[in-house]
Length: 353
Image (cartoon, rainbow, N blue to C red):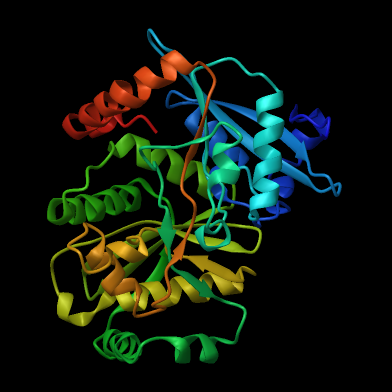
């Protein structure tokens, strides 16, 4: 058995943290970036930077977030990380994490290992992992390949997506990058509020969103994009990028002039912007799992829209927990997380993650 154990990042590694994250086997994720860590440190989580060395010498940079739960202890969460993509590499980072003997209640992994690549989950349970009863992020997504030419990307879309992009353009809809002024940040939140009023998914506070929008924009990893028609803002999104990857982080729209199909043009212009930044992959985030499509799932509408750009759903293995204290973890699994979810339903600003 390998003697390797996860270790704290050195000062030199911390100075180039985002470059290390972008070099991970998964291509990096902005939820592992320095800016995201600094932001979450203002909202109840403390970032801890670690490095794993795989048997073949590759390094994996992982930011673990720690939060203290009263009467329980510390919980650890690695959003979209550690940044490995194969079951074998995931096995190794879990093994090294166990060997570190860190204190707390549990540690939650969220690596983007493809579910199709790990049909037999006993490789995880033999390490003492338990499938989490809650996925804070999105377990399934749709990717857009940005490596081909713009014409080839556009041609890959469903006919109705191409038609709606042309319709928005012909109707006078304009998609534009906007600066993070107070007015534009407020407008973005109002767009999200309007969407939440229709979908009822819960929304954190204005201050929370605007804090990380500013943080990631200042780090050169974020951008606001609005669509307008004449004097009306119709839709908006906040997008992030790191290395060769881009993400649709937040979006919203008002319930006006929907016949102009502004959201299709917004997505297309976002892809063009990512491609110009050097991204080769665009993660649209947030669709139902494959077996949930068409079942009335709350994300069915999102899939109906996003599938017009690419119908193929990419499904990850989801979150897996490593219990550090068996008794406290059993309590958390049975009662703690359920109470946290109920609190978030009543007061979305109290979202745990």
